[in-house]
Image (tube, rainbow, N blue to C red):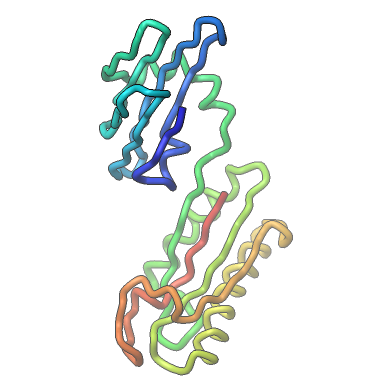
Length: 201
């Protein structure tokens, strides 16, 4: 069976399948809702059968030697059939974005308030893996933006270490103005591009 995802980043975590014995092969595949409400979809295709698109939360397909049936599952069925699988999987990655004052390595007031939530997320993971990615707007040279972006990432990394996160679990990267959140021309002071993105896995 092959599964082609329309939302690859979410599909692996959002799709569950249970498979019976080989002699009486049966499967149930359920598309789970995303926590942030994003739309996801997968196409399920087995051997020569027509593909089936699951594109709504709890859309499901049962396949057995006697045929296949689409239906709508629910949270109770998922918990009953897949509870052990869901409990065993690692927590999903969480993403936080902190913004900086123009030309500085100082957080905006709003970002200072986000920091405590970031640390709470890290603290609930037994062995956190943290990637800190610094970004800038397009004001200034590539070299100065690369340096500023890395400095911003290192500041966040240092604060994480100060609060007890092991340094070997934190990677700091500076991307300068290469990955703009808001596309602008050069020398545009766009505050939404002056940021650090923290991925917690």
